[in-house]
Length: 339
Image (cartoon, rainbow, N blue to C red; front, side, top):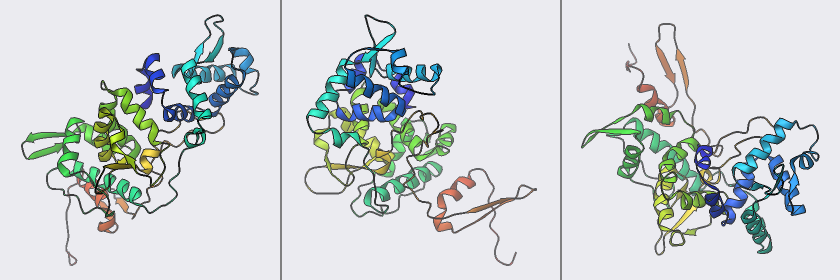
């Protein structure tokens, strides 16, 4: 989904985004390591180089693979074709200028590395897990499901009506009447997605609107925000504050219940929202996760017999979401102990 969004941006759009340090470094980290090595080579020489000259620095890499690395760098306008030599490429001057500024300002180390959430139990992790469970449970039971109390005493979760309205806008639900809602075919597709992909699904309509650049700038910065550090909502632009409300529903950020100024925190999902789109040679496919921080709280065994009877074994309290999903496709029968 990210590639589709980026493919619609113009060169001017990319250069606007590259005025933010978060976008500079996140974009480099999204690319295969060979692209980063090509960037470092061009950054060191500070002049155009022919593709053949660049390729000579890579052993056991085919021409087709090198062409793909060049294509990726050109597609996001980190590099540009040289006007005087069509076979040569050089760094985009806007990207180069702002990358140098990040080095000279002393902020390079702050932005150059993805911040890790090392604490398995924290308000941010609880908030992510609660959002995932509540969003999917509400989608399966949009009329009567109510959110349980948040596990974090400091979290300010969205209301049922906020989440339901978001689902209606994304066409995951349909309103048959003022008080009757039903899941759509798109909603069932949503349920099959990973947590990270679900977040992108909810964010996508706001990123593809007229306010795409402020939205992308905000999301790119999440990857580098310090875990457990509060960030001031007032520092965001108006389009970014509007996106913040959807990001809360998606579990990308959370806003605590605090007196005084309003702040937000990045969650583990927000930090993992952007992952590498293409793996380097020999590394195979990268996990597209973003939900690695989430640990399964229970387990269930499902047995399907030849007569299509289905039996599910597990603790109901730990598998409510899975049971709700099974109920969408099965006729449930409950038997007492003596039957």
